[in-house]
Length: 245
Image (cartoon, rainbow, N blue to C red):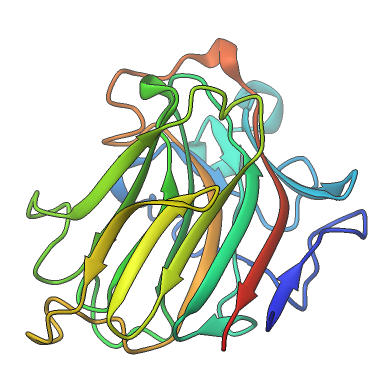
């Protein structure tokens, strides 16, 4: 094990391991998402009971003022290890319990660090995505210049976990120079192989960093609207562990 966070110190997440991604709050987040990502706000990200808790909340703008949250009615957190944990190849395991409810969109994923080119040419690995309107279905996906959701030809698969809102599962990535495997609880349900055809299909020879977040709404997460009665919703993470030979 070369890196881990066991979340055993209560309070804000460990600043030597995690940063907050807030760079597009004023410009609007990708995929037409509805959340504002806060910076070091315990209501949205904190460690308690030996777990990291990321919470997406429905905010009352009448009490906060329209200038707060850039006018967004939802707050959340997007944590990343960029510059503090960047890896090329390895085995990644994140034990987590996911939020549910229509409009929630939690993700555990990776991007290039530093970017080698504009997305998606630098590659994206989605270890776990779950949209609340399709409860219990977990997606593992790879995006490259040749294969991505903008083109509608992203590469991935899905697995059904009926209890993912109530039970912890181990979300896993096994990344080698020849293939990427994505799985849950030691069962791999998707493999993407390096066919040595070039960077457009395999941009995964550079380090990547880890991202943990809950988005709200958006093109996919909000495809069937947002049910405000579900909020707040929580992504609970027991640990993050990274292994390399």
